[in-house]
Image (cartoon, rainbow, N blue to C red; front, side, top):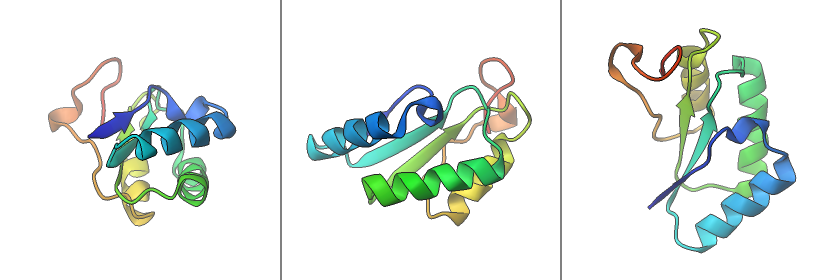
Length: 101
């Protein structure tokens, strides 16, 4: 079972940590980090993912990046470099607003 939040990257980290830890303890085997409005850059996303990994200690995690500022592919590749196993991707960038990775 996967646990996904809307707009993970803009939520306060103490809240994100409590929520994701509780969901993992309740049985979620995959945790999904979402940049729902596409505001992250590769460097800010890398920093977020490192802090998420340090605080939450995911064993299987995924990312869901939107392309509002044209950074979804770069951010997804950054996530793979940071150890994310299962990025969400789509064909031809289809998705709401500017699309997804």
